[in-house]
Amino acid sequence: MVSFLLTAMALASTAFALPPVVRDFGPPTTDGFPNPNPQQLLAIEQRADGMAPNGPLPSKVASSTITALQLIAFNENFEVAFFSSLLGNITSKVPGYEDKDGSMAKIIDTILAQEELHALGVIQVLQHYNQFAPMPCRYQFPVTNIDDAIQLAETFTAVVLGTLQDAVQGFAKGGDDAFVRLFASVIGQEGEQNGFYRFLGGAKPSESPFLTTSVASFAWTALQQFVVPGSCPFDLNAIPIPLHAPLMLQNAKVEAKDQVLTFTADLSNVQAAQAYVGKTTCQLFITYFNGQLLPISVPISNIRWNGGLMTFDAPFPFTENIMEGLSIAALTSGNNFAGPDDVPAQTWAAPALIQVVDKY
Ligand SMILES: *[C@@H]1O[C@H](CO)[C@@H](O)[C@H](O)[C@H]1NC(C)=O
Image 1 (cartoon, rainbow, N blue to C red):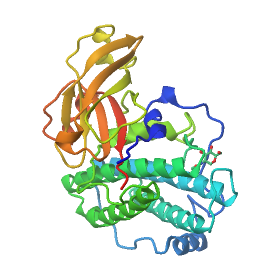
Image 2 (cartoon, rainbow, N blue to C red; image 1 turned 180 degrees about the vertical axis):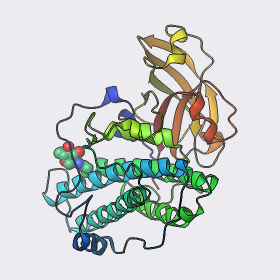
Image 3 (cartoon, rainbow, N blue to C red; image 1 turned 30 degrees about the vertical axis):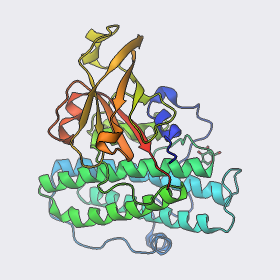
Image 4 (cartoon, rainbow, N blue to C red; image 1 turned 180 degrees about the horizontal axis):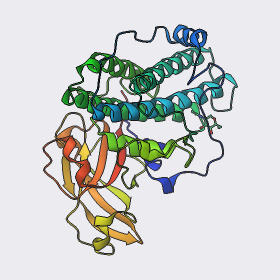
């Protein structure tokens, strides 16, 4: 069994670990996105192998639903830029993006058009309710070959699959059942994509019996790594979701076994952490999300400081919890959480994205 960590993504989980920006990428420029006219929309639908939904919208929605839709739109805009860049690299034969029989170009073009319809659909819903709808930013991707690009797509799609669980849960809580069927269909769609990305990377297509959950603030924070700072045509505060301090995983490889992981958290701007700076004993925990297990909290140890950066160790309890696939880690001041929703309020830094991929 070979397993590996998505180094690119793990490194990308803090701003200070990002490689210098050599190029940045915006939305596709040729198909009308994000403002297609009716003919352009039809052309996108034809490439996407299906049409945008045409059911009626409810007369009003909860403000929590609006926030969730804004995060989804922000994410879909990023995905559109990513697959547009990937497709461009494949079709213009950038070294490292070889596509021998042309099949990848066809598949990625379809995925790009499908993501465009996801983004346009959510943007239109927000506009229908006269709410702020995020337009695309400029983006940077920490990958320069097709294998790493697909691995990165696998990880961010896995995070999306967790975050959409959170969104649908929120729709139900807010009484907005009108969106549940639609987003259940998107969850399945993104899952189909991820099975393909996993298979390309040599992993079994189906990750685990119940996919890892996430929460909005973790996804919102993780997405910032891909945004060229200051490039969004709006103030990030327009989407009212908290941003966490960065948490970076130091290990280059996470294998399918019990082990100690080393993390670094940048606590320079975390108010609650200031009293602890320089101290080597803290009542802090790494809390993992994996599958549909209750949050798993383990104590941290071996604390060392470098200014506001805290480096520490924590066990990765793989065997007991069968932590295949994606685990999402947070540095928390609490443990014994009753569910994922309770974790963000006690989070000092997050998320670190951990991938254990058993090749078959
Ligand atoms: C496309 O290629 C450029 C140049 O190598 C690279 O910076 C960018 O990350 C690539 N995009 C994707 C999605 O792989």
